[in-house]
Amino acid sequence: MTQPLSVDELAMGLARRGTPLAPESAMFIVLEAVESMAARPVWLTPEGVLVGDDGVVTLAKGLDDVSVLEAMTSAMDTLEAVLTPAPHGIQSLARRVQTGDVEALPVFTSELEALLVPLNRSAARRMLGRLVREHLRTAERPAAHEAGTGTDEARHKDALDTVPDGGVREPSRAPRAVDESVLDDGGDDRPTRQGGSRGLGIVAVVLAAIAVLAAGMFLYHRIQVSASRAGLSQREGSIQGSSRALSAAR
View 1: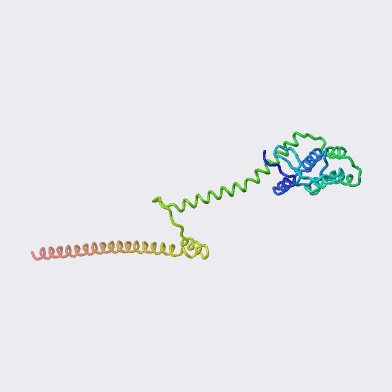
View 2: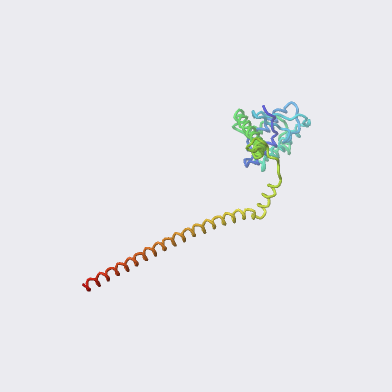
C-alpha cells in the first residue's frame, strides 16, 4: 500500500487533469472522516483528511481537539475548500450548522449521509481507490520520463563518443562552435553547395566538349566522303571524255 493522499492533493491533481473531484466523492470522504472522529472531535482540514489507494479514509496525526460545533464547521469548510462551487445541499447544511440547527455529531453524520442517498460504500471506496492510483501513476510519469530521457541522452552521448577502432573520441568544442554558427546564419553549408555546383559545371563542360568533338568528327567525315565522291566523279568524267576522243579519232 502506498502513502495515502490528502483530499487537497487529490482534488488539485484531478483539477489539473481537467476532471474536478465530484461532489459525491468529496462528501463521501468527509462523511468517512466525520465518522472516524466520533470519539474525539478534531479540526478537519483538506490536508489532514487522507485517502489510501484502497479507498479507505483516515485522519492525519496531530489534528487539534475541538468542540463538536467546531468539528462540524471544519468538516463543512473542508468540503467547500475542495468543491468550487459547493453544491446547494452542502451550502444549506453549512448554514444549518452555523445557525445551530444541527448540534450533535450523529445528526450531522446523518445529514451528510442523506445527501448521498443511495449510498454504496464499497463501490464508493473502490472508486476512490481508482482515483488515488490514477493520480499516483500520473505523478510518476514525468519522473520516469525524465529518468528515461537522461538515460537515453547518456547512451546517445556514449555512441557519439565511440569511434570505430574501439577508442574514445576526446570531447571537442570546435565542432560545436561550427554547428552553432550554422544555426546562427545558415551560411556554412554554402561552400559545399558551391563546390557541388562547380563539379556539375565541369562535368557539363566536358560533356559539351565531347559532343562538339563528335559533331566535328562527323562533319569532317562527311566532308571527306563528299570530296572523295567529287574526285571520283571528276576522274570518271575525264575517263569518259578520253574514251570519246579516241573513238572520234578512229
